[in-house]
Image (tube, rainbow, N blue to C red; front, side, top):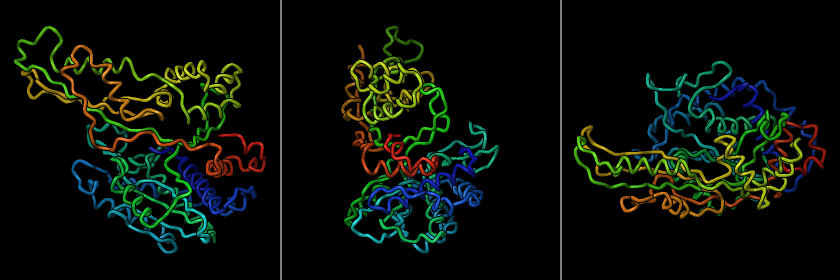
Length: 451
C-alpha cells in the first residue's frame, strides 16, 4: 500500500524530482529562489496522478526468471502498462525520445542543449514480485486492485516501485507544460521490466545500449530512500525530518547448502540427530543464533555523523560524531542491531533463509535436502564471505553438507560508496531542501550541512 496523503505526497515527490531535474541542467550549483519553479507546479494535479498510479498497479507486471524467457510472466500486462503510460503522458511521447528496449523496458531521452555536459540517468522499474491472491492471500485488499481506501493506495508496486515511475513522468510532464521544454543537460529515464529478478534483460540491456552509443553518465539517481517525516525518535527524540540519500547498495549472494544422509523408514529414525531434516534444522538454528558480526562502514558512518548535530543527548551525539572510532563504532553497531530489523540491516551483512526443501513421502526419511541462504553484503565483504561464514556453522556434520553458490540474481559485491561531499550529492540534497524547506535553501551554512 502507498499512503496518501497520496494526493499530496506523490506530487511533493514529483516537485522534488522536477526541482532536481532543473538543477541538473546547470553545470555549477547556484542558489536561485525556488518559488519560480514551485509556482508552476501545484497540487491540482494530485488526484489525476493518484488515479494514474492506481491504474498502473492494476497491471500484473510480474517478473519471472524461472519460467519466462523474457522475464515477463504476463507479457500482455507489460504491453498494457506501456499503453497506459503513453496515453497518460502524451506530451512526453511527443516531445521526448521514447524507445522500447528488450521488448518491454522503456528508455526515455530528454535531449539537452549543451552536449559538453554528461547526461544524468533516473532509474525505476515497471515489474513487481508475485503476490498470493484469493482466499489464501494475506492481503487485506487485492494486491493488483490499485484500491484507494482509507487514505492508502493498495497493491504491488505502490511502494516498489511503480510510484516512482509515475512521479518521474509527472515531474517531466509538469515541466513541459510549464514551458520548460529543453534542459541544458541531457536527461534519461530508464524503466526496466525485470528488476526484481536481477535486471539482466531490462536495465542490463539499456546499460549496454547506452554504452554502445558512447554515453558517459554524470551520475545515476536510483530508488533511494524516503523522507522520514517523524525522524528517528530512538536517536533524536524530537521530530526532525531526515532525508535518506542512498550512496551505495549492498552486495548480493545466495548459497545453497545441499545436505545428504541415510534415508530409511520413518518407523525407525536414528537417535543421534543425523537425519537430513535434523542437520538442516541445526544449520539454520546456528546461523539464526549467530548472525554476522555487526560493524559500521561507510555510508552508514556518514549517515550517523550527519545525524549527530540534531541529537539532543550529548553522550549519544558524541558517539554518533565519532562512530568511526574503534571503541564507539562497535558499540553503536551493537545498539543498532538491537533496535529493529531495519536498523540491524544497516549494521551488518544480513543472511536470511529463503527456501528449505526435503522429503518425498510422509513415511520415508529423506536422504537429501537443501537450504537456501540469501546474503546482503556490506561494503568491504567479498563474494567469498558467505561461504566462509557458513563453513563456521557446519558443525560435526560438515562432511554431509556441500555449499554451492547459485544463480538467480547475479552475485555481486557492494557498489562503491559515493561521496556525500561530491557535487552530485549536493545537487540531490539541494532538490530535497527546495522541496521541504524552500525558505532555508538560501542559507549556505545550512546547505553545507550533510543530510
